[in-house]
Image (cartoon, rainbow, N blue to C red; front, top):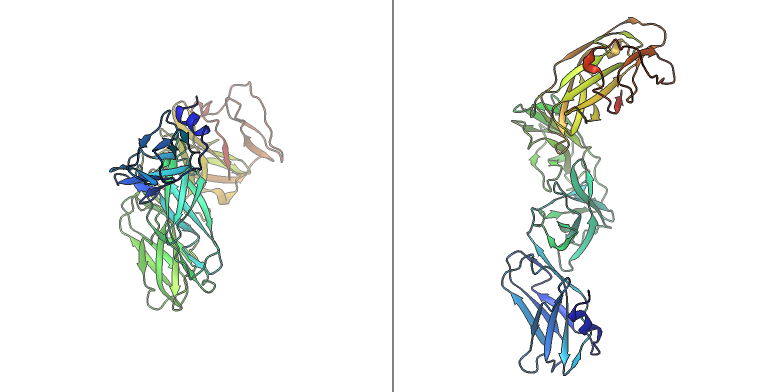
Length: 457
């Protein structure tokens, strides 16, 4: 449908006016704002059009020979946010419409987080990636640079591990400028309605290459029972004067420590582990030359004991011959999420598999083998919901796997997700898939309940 306003504008023959707002185009919720439209002297009427409206948003007839009309509201809200144009009338002729003008309201949603990857310390002439993120399903993010010449960039959001985020590449960096950034989030159906601004993030530009990045680890383990104490260690350089600890989605350091006894490392303590302290951590250090290192590799710090324990079982059993394959089944009432299989005392990293829902329960299957004596030991599994990757359940009951002497030649267990049971078949270098019509010999608890994707170990 063509509005009356659009029809009038299309008939315009006079030069187009200019449009703007005071104190600016981005206004926080509840603050006053004035949209102005400037044309020639002796304009007899001004009209303001808001995109999506079928009639003029407002109109004004100036008193005296003024060349500007003002449209004001004492309280900015979502209603006033949008794209505007204005035009004017002289005698019976209407002007062409002004260029479009976006009036933005901020403060309508909770603020996103802003962080620098890999570090807020950047070498002069280098680039840095800024990450804006939120757990809410926003469609896009806006990055703004503060200063005399304000700049902004817009990116569509992408979902990663339950979080919505956008990455902005900024640079090349110069030490003679101030580099302070904020970011906002928005939904695509209301692009002029923004969230609260993130906390400000200031980038530090150094004139030389940064020192080598430090290493980071957790003592006694990066998987910590809820309420327990954990120490995060950061090892950098003998020249380090101060260490900073960073946590993902927090723009500022969460802790600062001096080196311990003139050594090349320091420690950060968490007295009581909780879901709030779980997450990805990095550390960095500054030397006597006031030069900051890169951030360390990320350390995933997990809290356990937040949810009920899943169950763990093995097929064909907990005692198997060397050369066979073993399936570990982890099951929980919670879905969707991820299962993790760990071997106690093992140096290997945890294995992970996404939960699949069957008969109202989440299930995951881990394939181990062909096994040898090194696979023997005690296993446990954990569960975490999709939205909280570092908040895990209580551990499952322990399952001790015993690997005996050599089994039959090329013997193993094969399992076809399309089948309704698990069968013992000869194992060869090529996986064999076989339909089974015989009566299965495995316990009924395994039958037809666990056909998710298999995580091979």
